[in-house]
Length: 402
Ligand SMILES: *Cc1c(COP(=O)(O)O)cnc(C)c1O
Image 1 (cartoon, rainbow, N blue to C red):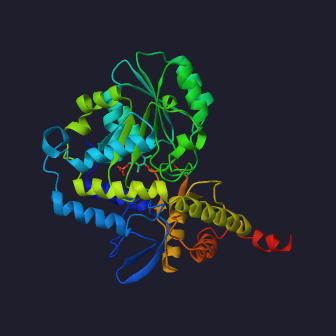
Image 2 (image 1 turned 90 degrees about the vertical axis):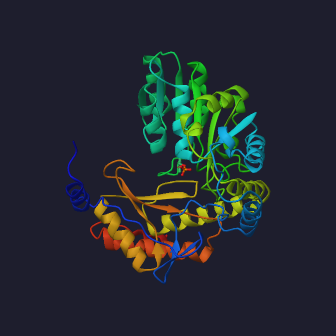
Image 3 (image 1 turned 180 degrees about the vertical axis):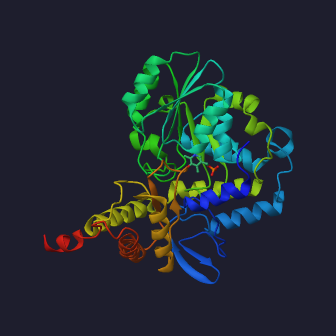
């Protein structure tokens, strides 16, 4: 029996790990309105600025008029509607895979896929920094769960050699959600082939963002469809809507329809949301300027951070972590930023490993150059305030004089 709730809560507060929510009064975008105050936000996953796009809103409204709000049942009963089906076909084409299957959330897609494919006697290999839903899925599956060193194919290789099993599944984030770095995909593909393991990539943060047509990490590295037989995408991030999907072979998808418990035993997502996602998928594919804009802003941010001596990780994705270490300083910096009109949430354990609390900065194609510059300036001030003993920012003068 764990401690009583009041005691647990008290301990979380003492450890600076207590979490609380903000209530925003406006639509998702680069600004947030909270209790009448305006903030510029750098913490949403709406990377392409599509969550509040008029075409998505129109598609949602039109479909709601035709299909109502709730889907009324699970997909296998009567919840599977024309917009869901059309979206699945379009997602299959988009990912160049035979078939795609919608799930209500990415969390559920991962739980459903892994528990359907692996069980007792099998082994699931996961990157240490995989998203919580992949780790939970590995544990729930009943398979032996082996975690390899982050983005380290040699570490994976050692584990694969040591654990022969009936089914071997390798699961990795494509873009790591808290670090913004990429999985070493070509090396993972080689290991999977060599050891006859199934490779599953959860590209929640890569789809829409990476690759010339937004095809994600697979398009970025030019790996073939056969190299990644199991691809997970989420729709609440770059696509700006809600839901998730698994893309793969005809048989794999058919198996998930039969076996994935988080597919079978839950209500289908609202058909109007699927209709809005169809509109979003069109924009993701056709408006490549959004990806280009994002890359320009990422470069601007990285360059500015280097000039100011900000300890920002080298990341080529819209996820730009600034690792501060302890939870208290991170909270302090987030607070300082907020007082200066900038909203960035402090990410603390257990979301990230101990002593790697961080400001997880995310950029959107909808941010302006001026907003990035303001962010840099305010970050500099906030870090100086939160970590007064460190030499952060001392390179500012040097940068100007060299
Ligand atoms: C956000 C995320 C998920 C969960 O997706 P939801 O649709 O929000 O449940 C899964 N995997 C990764 C890597 C994510 O970043």
